[in-house]
Amino acid sequence: MLILLGSFLCLMVLGVPVAISMAVASLAFILVSGTVPDVILAQRMIAGVESFPLLAVPFFILAGNLMNIAGVTGRIYAFAVALVGWMRGGLAQVNIIGSVIFSGMSGTAIADAAGIGTIEIKAMKDHGYSAEVAVGVTAASATLGPIIPPSLPFVIYGMMSNTSIGALFLGGVIPGVLMTLFMMATVAIFARIYKWGSDTAFSLRDLGSAGVEVLVVMGFPVLAYGLVFAGLDPNLAIGIALAVLLAMDYYFDFSAVMALMTPVILIGGMTMGWFTPTEAAAAAVIWSLFLGLVRYRSMTMRSLTKATFDTIETTASVLFIVTAASIFAWLLTVSQTAQLLSDLILGFTQNKWVFLILVNLLLLFIGCFLDTIAAITIVVPILLPIALKLGVDPIHFGLILTLNLMIGLLHPPLGMVLFVLSRVAKLSVERTTMAILPWLIPLFAALFAITFIPELTLWLPRTMGMIR
Image 1 (cartoon, rainbow, N blue to C red):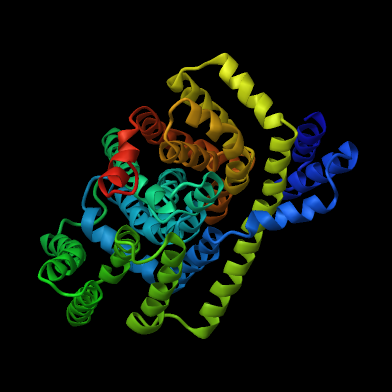
Image 2 (cartoon, rainbow, N blue to C red; image 1 turned 60 degrees about the horizontal axis):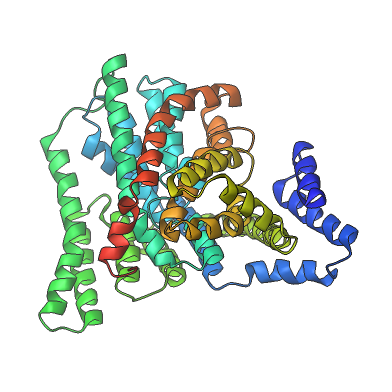
Protein backbone atom coordinates (compact mmCIF):
# COMPACT_ATOMS: atom_id res chain seq x y z
CA MET A 1 0.00 0.00 0.00
CA LEU A 2 2.83 2.41 0.91
CA ILE A 3 4.78 1.62 -2.28
CA LEU A 4 1.76 1.78 -4.55
CA LEU A 5 0.13 4.96 -3.23
CA GLY A 6 3.37 6.63 -2.11
CA SER A 7 5.12 6.36 -5.47
CA PHE A 8 1.96 7.44 -7.29
CA LEU A 9 1.56 10.57 -5.15
CA CYS A 10 5.28 11.43 -5.40
CA LEU A 11 5.20 11.21 -9.19
CA MET A 12 2.04 13.36 -9.31
CA VAL A 13 3.73 16.01 -7.14
CA LEU A 14 6.71 16.00 -9.52
CA GLY A 15 4.35 16.80 -12.40
CA VAL A 16 4.44 13.43 -14.15
CA PRO A 17 1.26 12.83 -16.23
CA VAL A 18 -1.36 10.90 -14.29
CA ALA A 19 -1.41 7.86 -16.62
CA ILE A 20 2.38 7.46 -16.48
CA SER A 21 2.31 7.96 -12.70
CA MET A 22 -0.16 5.09 -12.28
CA ALA A 23 1.75 2.80 -14.67
CA VAL A 24 5.13 3.44 -13.02
CA ALA A 25 3.68 3.06 -9.50
CA SER A 26 2.11 -0.24 -10.53
CA LEU A 27 5.39 -1.47 -12.02
CA ALA A 28 7.28 -0.43 -8.88
CA PHE A 29 4.83 -2.36 -6.70
CA ILE A 30 5.19 -5.50 -8.86
CA LEU A 31 9.01 -5.33 -8.88
CA VAL A 32 9.39 -4.63 -5.15
CA SER A 33 6.71 -6.98 -3.82
CA GLY A 34 7.69 -9.93 -5.99
CA THR A 35 4.24 -11.42 -5.39
CA VAL A 36 2.80 -10.59 -8.82
CA PRO A 37 4.34 -11.96 -12.06
CA ASP A 38 5.66 -9.26 -14.43
CA VAL A 39 3.43 -10.46 -17.25
CA ILE A 40 0.38 -9.51 -15.17
CA LEU A 41 1.14 -5.84 -15.89
CA ALA A 42 0.62 -6.28 -19.62
CA GLN A 43 -2.30 -8.67 -19.20
CA ARG A 44 -4.27 -6.37 -16.90
CA MET A 45 -3.60 -3.31 -19.03
CA ILE A 46 -4.88 -5.10 -22.13
CA ALA A 47 -7.87 -6.45 -20.22
CA GLY A 48 -8.68 -2.88 -19.17
CA VAL A 49 -9.48 -1.83 -22.74
CA GLU A 50 -10.72 -5.18 -24.07
CA SER A 51 -14.35 -4.21 -23.59
CA PHE A 52 -17.25 -3.85 -26.02
CA PRO A 53 -18.74 -0.79 -24.24
CA LEU A 54 -15.42 1.04 -24.65
CA LEU A 55 -15.96 1.02 -28.41
CA ALA A 56 -18.39 3.85 -27.74
CA VAL A 57 -15.51 6.11 -26.67
CA PRO A 58 -13.91 6.77 -30.10
CA PHE A 59 -17.33 6.97 -31.77
CA PHE A 60 -18.71 9.60 -29.40
CA ILE A 61 -15.46 11.59 -29.63
CA LEU A 62 -15.62 11.41 -33.44
CA ALA A 63 -19.29 12.43 -33.44
CA GLY A 64 -18.48 15.52 -31.37
CA ASN A 65 -15.59 16.45 -33.67
CA LEU A 66 -17.73 15.96 -36.78
CA MET A 67 -20.50 18.13 -35.33
CA ASN A 68 -17.93 20.88 -34.76
CA ILE A 69 -16.73 20.88 -38.36
CA ALA A 70 -20.16 20.32 -39.95
CA GLY A 71 -21.40 23.78 -39.05
CA VAL A 72 -23.82 22.34 -36.50
CA THR A 73 -22.44 24.45 -33.63
CA GLY A 74 -23.24 27.68 -35.48
CA ARG A 75 -26.79 26.53 -36.18
CA ILE A 76 -27.30 25.51 -32.56
CA TYR A 77 -26.08 28.92 -31.46
CA ALA A 78 -28.45 30.72 -33.85
CA PHE A 79 -31.35 28.60 -32.62
CA ALA A 80 -30.52 29.38 -28.99
CA VAL A 81 -30.32 33.12 -29.77
CA ALA A 82 -33.80 33.01 -31.29
CA LEU A 83 -35.13 31.08 -28.32
CA VAL A 84 -33.71 33.01 -25.33
CA GLY A 85 -31.48 35.81 -26.66
CA TRP A 86 -34.19 38.42 -25.93
CA MET A 87 -34.08 37.75 -22.17
CA ARG A 88 -32.04 39.88 -19.79
CA GLY A 89 -28.50 38.54 -19.90
CA GLY A 90 -29.57 36.98 -23.19
CA LEU A 91 -26.24 35.67 -24.45
CA ALA A 92 -25.49 34.10 -21.07
CA GLN A 93 -28.82 32.25 -21.37
CA VAL A 94 -27.94 31.37 -24.96
CA ASN A 95 -24.66 29.95 -23.69
CA ILE A 96 -26.52 27.56 -21.39
CA ILE A 97 -29.17 26.48 -23.91
CA GLY A 98 -26.51 25.96 -26.59
CA SER A 99 -24.55 23.73 -24.24
CA VAL A 100 -27.68 21.71 -23.41
CA ILE A 101 -28.25 20.97 -27.09
CA PHE A 102 -24.61 20.29 -27.88
CA SER A 103 -24.40 18.01 -24.84
CA GLY A 104 -26.73 15.63 -26.62
CA MET A 105 -24.10 15.14 -29.33
CA SER A 106 -20.58 15.35 -27.91
CA GLY A 107 -20.79 13.59 -24.54
CA THR A 108 -17.76 15.44 -23.13
CA ALA A 109 -17.28 18.72 -21.27
CA ILE A 110 -14.06 19.49 -23.15
CA ALA A 111 -15.71 19.13 -26.58
CA ASP A 112 -18.49 21.42 -25.40
CA ALA A 113 -16.05 24.06 -24.12
CA ALA A 114 -13.80 23.91 -27.18
CA GLY A 115 -16.64 23.67 -29.71
CA ILE A 116 -19.68 25.82 -29.11
CA GLY A 117 -17.91 27.51 -26.17
CA THR A 118 -15.54 29.24 -28.59
CA ILE A 119 -18.46 30.82 -30.46
CA GLU A 120 -20.25 31.79 -27.25
CA ILE A 121 -17.27 33.49 -25.59
CA LYS A 122 -16.52 35.58 -28.69
CA ALA A 123 -20.16 36.63 -29.05
CA MET A 124 -20.46 37.61 -25.39
CA LYS A 125 -17.27 39.67 -25.49
CA ASP A 126 -18.46 41.39 -28.69
CA HIS A 127 -21.70 42.35 -26.91
CA GLY A 128 -19.88 44.01 -24.02
CA TYR A 129 -19.69 41.21 -21.47
CA SER A 130 -16.39 40.94 -19.65
CA ALA A 131 -14.14 38.03 -20.53
CA GLU A 132 -14.55 36.77 -16.95
CA VAL A 133 -18.35 36.57 -17.21
CA ALA A 134 -18.15 34.84 -20.60
CA VAL A 135 -15.65 32.29 -19.32
CA GLY A 136 -17.56 31.66 -16.08
CA VAL A 137 -20.91 30.84 -17.65
CA THR A 138 -19.24 28.80 -20.42
CA ALA A 139 -17.34 26.72 -17.87
CA ALA A 140 -20.46 26.07 -15.79
CA SER A 141 -22.56 25.09 -18.81
CA ALA A 142 -19.80 22.80 -20.15
CA THR A 143 -20.35 20.50 -17.16
CA LEU A 144 -23.70 19.57 -18.73
CA GLY A 145 -21.88 17.62 -21.46
CA PRO A 146 -21.27 14.41 -19.47
CA ILE A 147 -24.55 14.64 -17.51
CA ILE A 148 -27.03 15.01 -20.38
CA PRO A 149 -26.74 11.86 -22.51
CA PRO A 150 -24.72 10.65 -24.29
CA SER A 151 -21.81 10.70 -21.86
CA LEU A 152 -18.30 9.27 -22.06
CA PRO A 153 -17.86 9.15 -18.25
CA PHE A 154 -21.10 7.15 -18.04
CA VAL A 155 -19.68 4.66 -20.55
CA ILE A 156 -16.51 4.20 -18.48
CA TYR A 157 -18.45 4.01 -15.20
CA GLY A 158 -20.95 1.54 -16.65
CA MET A 159 -18.09 -0.69 -17.80
CA MET A 160 -16.35 -0.52 -14.42
CA SER A 161 -19.49 -1.10 -12.35
CA ASN A 162 -21.38 -3.54 -14.61
CA THR A 163 -24.26 -1.05 -14.69
CA SER A 164 -26.59 -0.53 -17.64
CA ILE A 165 -25.18 2.35 -19.70
CA GLY A 166 -28.60 2.99 -21.18
CA ALA A 167 -30.07 3.37 -17.68
CA LEU A 168 -27.23 5.75 -16.78
CA PHE A 169 -28.00 7.83 -19.87
CA LEU A 170 -31.68 8.06 -18.90
CA GLY A 171 -30.71 8.79 -15.31
CA GLY A 172 -28.82 11.88 -16.44
CA VAL A 173 -31.78 13.54 -18.17
CA ILE A 174 -33.64 15.02 -15.16
CA PRO A 175 -30.43 16.04 -13.31
CA GLY A 176 -29.30 17.73 -16.53
CA VAL A 177 -32.57 19.64 -16.75
CA LEU A 178 -32.27 20.61 -13.08
CA MET A 179 -28.73 21.91 -13.60
CA THR A 180 -29.92 23.90 -16.61
CA LEU A 181 -32.71 25.55 -14.62
CA PHE A 182 -30.34 26.40 -11.74
CA MET A 183 -27.86 27.98 -14.15
CA MET A 184 -30.55 29.98 -15.96
CA ALA A 185 -31.87 31.22 -12.60
CA THR A 186 -28.31 32.27 -11.66
CA VAL A 187 -28.01 34.24 -14.92
CA ALA A 188 -31.35 35.94 -14.19
CA ILE A 189 -30.13 36.95 -10.71
CA PHE A 190 -26.80 38.24 -12.01
CA ALA A 191 -28.59 40.10 -14.81
CA ARG A 192 -30.67 41.97 -12.25
CA ILE A 193 -27.68 42.69 -9.98
CA TYR A 194 -25.38 43.89 -12.77
CA LYS A 195 -28.19 45.40 -14.87
CA TRP A 196 -27.58 43.30 -17.96
CA GLY A 197 -30.04 43.96 -20.75
CA SER A 198 -31.25 41.77 -23.59
CA ASP A 199 -28.80 41.16 -26.43
CA THR A 200 -31.26 40.73 -29.27
CA ALA A 201 -34.56 42.46 -29.90
CA PHE A 202 -37.62 40.42 -29.03
CA SER A 203 -39.00 38.95 -32.24
CA LEU A 204 -42.21 37.02 -32.10
CA ARG A 205 -41.40 35.63 -35.52
CA ASP A 206 -37.97 34.31 -34.48
CA LEU A 207 -39.33 32.93 -31.22
CA GLY A 208 -42.20 31.30 -33.06
CA SER A 209 -39.81 29.82 -35.60
CA ALA A 210 -37.66 28.34 -32.82
CA GLY A 211 -40.80 27.01 -31.12
CA VAL A 212 -41.94 25.39 -34.36
CA GLU A 213 -38.57 23.63 -34.68
CA VAL A 214 -38.96 22.23 -31.16
CA LEU A 215 -42.47 21.04 -31.98
CA VAL A 216 -41.27 19.41 -35.20
CA VAL A 217 -38.58 17.49 -33.27
CA MET A 218 -41.11 16.47 -30.62
CA GLY A 219 -43.51 15.44 -33.37
CA PHE A 220 -41.07 12.86 -34.75
CA PRO A 221 -41.47 10.30 -31.91
CA VAL A 222 -45.18 11.10 -31.66
CA LEU A 223 -45.65 10.31 -35.37
CA ALA A 224 -43.50 7.17 -35.16
CA TYR A 225 -45.37 5.85 -32.10
CA GLY A 226 -48.71 6.72 -33.73
CA LEU A 227 -47.86 4.71 -36.85
CA VAL A 228 -46.76 1.75 -34.72
CA PHE A 229 -49.98 1.99 -32.73
CA ALA A 230 -51.90 1.98 -36.03
CA GLY A 231 -50.36 -1.40 -36.83
CA LEU A 232 -47.31 -0.57 -38.96
CA ASP A 233 -44.01 -2.35 -38.58
CA PRO A 234 -41.80 -0.30 -36.21
CA ASN A 235 -38.96 -0.02 -38.74
CA LEU A 236 -41.37 1.13 -41.44
CA ALA A 237 -42.98 3.60 -39.03
CA ILE A 238 -39.61 5.14 -38.17
CA GLY A 239 -38.69 5.30 -41.84
CA ILE A 240 -41.89 7.16 -42.68
CA ALA A 241 -41.49 9.56 -39.75
CA LEU A 242 -37.88 10.26 -40.72
CA ALA A 243 -38.85 10.82 -44.37
CA VAL A 244 -41.52 13.33 -43.28
CA LEU A 245 -39.00 15.09 -41.06
CA LEU A 246 -36.39 15.31 -43.83
CA ALA A 247 -38.98 16.62 -46.30
CA MET A 248 -40.11 19.33 -43.86
CA ASP A 249 -36.53 20.30 -43.07
CA TYR A 250 -35.67 20.56 -46.78
CA TYR A 251 -38.81 22.55 -47.63
CA PHE A 252 -38.77 24.98 -44.70
CA ASP A 253 -34.94 25.06 -44.31
CA PHE A 254 -35.02 24.87 -40.52
CA SER A 255 -31.87 26.11 -38.80
CA ALA A 256 -31.41 23.41 -36.16
CA VAL A 257 -34.03 20.65 -36.50
CA MET A 258 -31.53 18.07 -37.73
CA ALA A 259 -29.10 18.94 -34.94
CA LEU A 260 -31.87 18.76 -32.34
CA MET A 261 -32.77 15.30 -33.62
CA THR A 262 -29.45 13.82 -32.51
CA PRO A 263 -30.33 13.21 -28.83
CA VAL A 264 -33.85 12.12 -29.85
CA ILE A 265 -32.42 9.42 -32.12
CA LEU A 266 -29.84 8.26 -29.57
CA ILE A 267 -32.06 8.16 -26.49
CA GLY A 268 -35.11 6.92 -28.39
CA GLY A 269 -33.13 4.17 -30.08
CA MET A 270 -31.65 2.90 -26.83
CA THR A 271 -34.95 3.13 -24.96
CA MET A 272 -36.76 1.17 -27.67
CA GLY A 273 -33.99 -1.42 -27.80
CA TRP A 274 -33.01 -0.71 -31.41
CA PHE A 275 -29.37 -0.40 -30.51
CA THR A 276 -27.00 -0.60 -27.55
CA PRO A 277 -25.15 2.47 -26.23
CA THR A 278 -22.10 1.38 -28.22
CA GLU A 279 -24.16 1.08 -31.39
CA ALA A 280 -25.75 4.44 -30.53
CA ALA A 281 -22.30 6.00 -30.65
CA ALA A 282 -21.82 4.60 -34.17
CA ALA A 283 -25.28 5.92 -35.09
CA ALA A 284 -24.21 9.38 -33.85
CA VAL A 285 -21.22 9.27 -36.20
CA ILE A 286 -23.39 8.24 -39.16
CA TRP A 287 -25.87 11.04 -38.37
CA SER A 288 -23.02 13.56 -38.08
CA LEU A 289 -21.65 12.47 -41.46
CA PHE A 290 -25.13 12.77 -42.98
CA LEU A 291 -25.49 16.33 -41.66
CA GLY A 292 -22.03 17.43 -42.77
CA LEU A 293 -21.86 15.72 -46.16
CA VAL A 294 -25.50 15.60 -47.31
CA ARG A 295 -27.77 18.01 -45.46
CA TYR A 296 -25.53 21.04 -44.84
CA ARG A 297 -22.71 20.13 -47.25
CA SER A 298 -20.23 21.95 -45.04
CA MET A 299 -17.76 19.11 -44.54
CA THR A 300 -14.71 18.74 -46.76
CA MET A 301 -12.21 15.91 -47.00
CA ARG A 302 -9.61 18.13 -45.36
CA SER A 303 -11.85 18.87 -42.36
CA LEU A 304 -12.99 15.24 -42.17
CA THR A 305 -9.35 14.11 -42.09
CA LYS A 306 -8.55 16.61 -39.34
CA ALA A 307 -11.53 15.46 -37.26
CA THR A 308 -10.42 11.84 -37.69
CA PHE A 309 -6.85 12.50 -36.54
CA ASP A 310 -8.10 14.60 -33.61
CA THR A 311 -10.29 11.65 -32.64
CA ILE A 312 -7.35 9.23 -32.84
CA GLU A 313 -5.26 11.49 -30.62
CA THR A 314 -7.99 11.97 -28.01
CA THR A 315 -8.98 8.29 -28.03
CA ALA A 316 -5.38 7.17 -27.58
CA SER A 317 -5.04 9.53 -24.62
CA VAL A 318 -8.28 8.31 -22.99
CA LEU A 319 -7.55 4.62 -23.50
CA PHE A 320 -3.97 4.95 -22.26
CA ILE A 321 -5.37 6.40 -19.04
CA VAL A 322 -7.87 3.52 -18.86
CA THR A 323 -5.13 0.90 -19.31
CA ALA A 324 -2.88 2.44 -16.67
CA ALA A 325 -5.78 2.95 -14.26
CA SER A 326 -6.93 -0.65 -14.77
CA ILE A 327 -3.72 -2.20 -13.49
CA PHE A 328 -3.51 0.39 -10.70
CA ALA A 329 -7.09 -0.30 -9.55
CA TRP A 330 -6.51 -4.08 -9.77
CA LEU A 331 -3.41 -3.81 -7.59
CA LEU A 332 -5.35 -1.70 -5.08
CA THR A 333 -7.77 -4.62 -4.84
CA VAL A 334 -5.33 -7.56 -4.67
CA SER A 335 -3.05 -5.76 -2.18
CA GLN A 336 -6.06 -5.36 0.14
CA THR A 337 -5.68 -1.57 -0.04
CA ALA A 338 -9.23 -1.18 -1.30
CA GLN A 339 -10.49 -3.41 1.52
CA LEU A 340 -8.55 -1.43 4.12
CA LEU A 341 -9.99 1.84 2.85
CA SER A 342 -13.45 0.28 2.75
CA ASP A 343 -13.15 -0.94 6.36
CA LEU A 344 -11.89 2.50 7.40
CA ILE A 345 -14.91 4.25 5.89
CA LEU A 346 -17.42 1.71 7.22
CA GLY A 347 -15.79 1.96 10.63
CA PHE A 348 -16.39 5.69 10.57
CA THR A 349 -20.05 5.56 9.55
CA GLN A 350 -22.79 3.11 8.63
CA ASN A 351 -25.20 5.89 7.63
CA LYS A 352 -25.89 6.16 3.91
CA TRP A 353 -26.28 9.94 3.91
CA VAL A 354 -23.15 10.59 5.95
CA PHE A 355 -21.29 8.30 3.53
CA LEU A 356 -22.57 10.28 0.53
CA ILE A 357 -21.45 13.54 2.14
CA LEU A 358 -17.97 12.07 2.66
CA VAL A 359 -17.96 10.78 -0.93
CA ASN A 360 -18.83 14.23 -2.25
CA LEU A 361 -16.00 15.83 -0.29
CA LEU A 362 -13.54 13.15 -1.39
CA LEU A 363 -14.53 13.28 -5.06
CA LEU A 364 -14.43 17.09 -5.18
CA PHE A 365 -10.86 16.86 -3.92
CA ILE A 366 -9.89 14.02 -6.26
CA GLY A 367 -11.45 15.81 -9.25
CA CYS A 368 -9.01 18.69 -8.80
CA PHE A 369 -6.01 16.38 -9.25
CA LEU A 370 -7.02 13.41 -11.39
CA ASP A 371 -8.31 13.15 -14.92
CA THR A 372 -11.99 12.15 -15.00
CA ILE A 373 -11.44 8.77 -16.65
CA ALA A 374 -8.55 7.90 -14.33
CA ALA A 375 -10.54 8.95 -11.27
CA ILE A 376 -13.51 6.77 -12.26
CA THR A 377 -11.39 3.69 -12.85
CA ILE A 378 -9.58 4.12 -9.52
CA VAL A 379 -12.39 5.06 -7.12
CA VAL A 380 -15.20 2.83 -8.44
CA PRO A 381 -13.64 -0.47 -7.21
CA ILE A 382 -13.12 1.15 -3.77
CA LEU A 383 -16.28 3.19 -3.22
CA LEU A 384 -18.98 1.35 -5.15
CA PRO A 385 -18.95 -1.83 -2.98
CA ILE A 386 -19.41 0.37 0.10
CA ALA A 387 -22.24 2.26 -1.58
CA LEU A 388 -23.99 -1.00 -2.45
CA LYS A 389 -23.64 -2.28 1.12
CA LEU A 390 -25.28 0.92 2.38
CA GLY A 391 -28.15 0.68 -0.11
CA VAL A 392 -27.08 3.35 -2.61
CA ASP A 393 -28.27 2.56 -6.13
CA PRO A 394 -25.32 2.25 -8.57
CA ILE A 395 -27.01 4.58 -11.09
CA HIS A 396 -27.54 7.22 -8.41
CA PHE A 397 -23.93 6.78 -7.31
CA GLY A 398 -22.75 7.14 -10.91
CA LEU A 399 -24.48 10.51 -11.27
CA ILE A 400 -22.98 11.76 -8.00
CA LEU A 401 -19.53 10.56 -9.04
CA THR A 402 -19.69 12.12 -12.51
CA LEU A 403 -21.01 15.51 -11.40
CA ASN A 404 -18.33 15.81 -8.72
CA LEU A 405 -15.62 15.04 -11.25
CA MET A 406 -17.12 17.52 -13.73
CA ILE A 407 -16.87 20.24 -11.10
CA GLY A 408 -13.25 19.15 -10.63
CA LEU A 409 -12.62 19.96 -14.32
CA LEU A 410 -13.11 23.64 -13.46
CA HIS A 411 -10.29 23.78 -10.87
CA PRO A 412 -6.50 23.76 -10.94
CA PRO A 413 -4.16 21.97 -11.00
CA LEU A 414 -5.57 19.54 -13.61
CA GLY A 415 -8.92 21.03 -14.64
CA MET A 416 -8.93 20.54 -18.41
CA VAL A 417 -11.97 22.78 -19.03
CA LEU A 418 -10.19 25.49 -17.06
CA PHE A 419 -7.14 25.31 -19.35
CA VAL A 420 -9.18 25.09 -22.56
CA LEU A 421 -11.23 28.18 -21.69
CA SER A 422 -8.13 30.02 -20.49
CA ARG A 423 -6.65 29.60 -23.97
CA VAL A 424 -9.88 30.43 -25.79
CA ALA A 425 -10.51 33.63 -23.79
CA LYS A 426 -6.81 34.56 -23.60
CA LEU A 427 -6.97 34.89 -19.81
CA SER A 428 -4.46 33.67 -17.26
CA VAL A 429 -5.35 30.49 -15.38
CA GLU A 430 -5.61 32.54 -12.17
CA ARG A 431 -8.14 35.01 -13.66
CA THR A 432 -10.06 32.16 -15.25
CA THR A 433 -10.27 30.35 -11.90
CA MET A 434 -11.61 33.45 -10.15
CA ALA A 435 -14.12 34.01 -12.96
CA ILE A 436 -15.52 30.50 -12.51
CA LEU A 437 -16.02 30.68 -8.73
CA PRO A 438 -19.46 32.45 -8.69
CA TRP A 439 -20.83 29.94 -11.18
CA LEU A 440 -20.07 27.05 -8.87
CA ILE A 441 -23.11 28.07 -6.79
CA PRO A 442 -25.73 26.49 -9.14
CA LEU A 443 -23.49 23.45 -9.63
CA PHE A 444 -23.21 22.81 -5.89
CA ALA A 445 -26.96 23.39 -5.50
CA ALA A 446 -27.61 20.77 -8.19
CA LEU A 447 -25.10 18.40 -6.58
CA PHE A 448 -26.87 18.74 -3.22
CA ALA A 449 -30.27 18.03 -4.79
CA ILE A 450 -29.03 15.06 -6.84
CA THR A 451 -27.26 13.55 -3.81
CA PHE A 452 -30.16 13.76 -1.38
CA ILE A 453 -33.10 13.23 -3.78
CA PRO A 454 -32.28 9.90 -5.50
CA GLU A 455 -35.57 9.91 -7.46
CA LEU A 456 -34.26 12.80 -9.58
CA THR A 457 -31.90 10.22 -11.06
CA LEU A 458 -33.87 6.98 -10.73
CA TRP A 459 -37.42 7.98 -11.70
CA LEU A 460 -36.97 8.07 -15.47
CA PRO A 461 -35.01 4.79 -15.93
CA ARG A 462 -37.46 3.10 -13.53
CA THR A 463 -40.45 4.48 -15.46
CA MET A 464 -38.96 3.28 -18.76
CA GLY A 465 -38.49 -0.21 -17.28
CA MET A 466 -34.66 -0.18 -17.39
CA ILE A 467 -34.33 -0.71 -13.61
CA ARG A 468 -36.67 -2.00 -10.89
